[in-house]
Length: 177
Image (cartoon, rainbow, N blue to C red; front, side, top):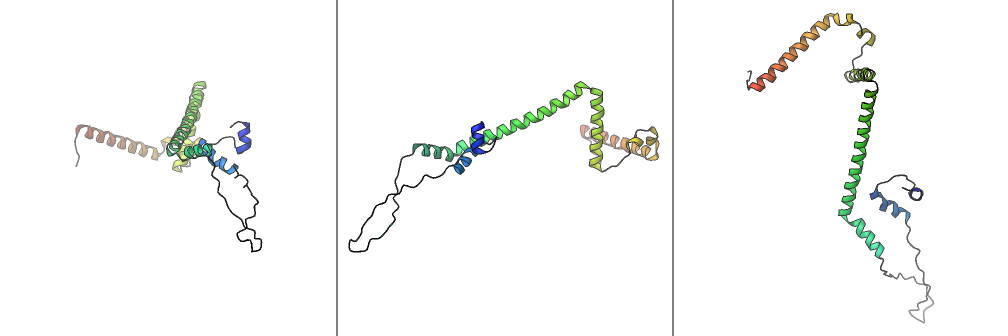
């Protein structure tokens, strides 16, 4: 919005489809035209005061054009589709900006970037698995010579062998019953 529209709508940004709704809230009906005229129905009766509503039809071409525009479902659907496309484009731009920053930080300092990234991934993994470890202890080689490490390595290799075996059986069409 430019500065005048910002003052009117009290907003810096809005969807195009919101304009009629916001305008409707700002528009006021015109003052009624009051015609003072005495109508005497029966001359013998006392003077009475009566109010009459007189409908006056006036051709308002702008109003009909606006109504046809606003009521047109095709244009509303088109506006909504374009609005969604704009939001998707903005989201894509934000994702590309994040990717660019990611790649630029890698280009500036590859080693530091990878170290920071690995630490971040490690923190995320620990947060997801609720594993609480001691980073200082995990840096030492003695930590990995404990009895549990040998068992973990055996289980890991066994699962990898089983996985490869299943892949081979699937490729050859062999079923193990």
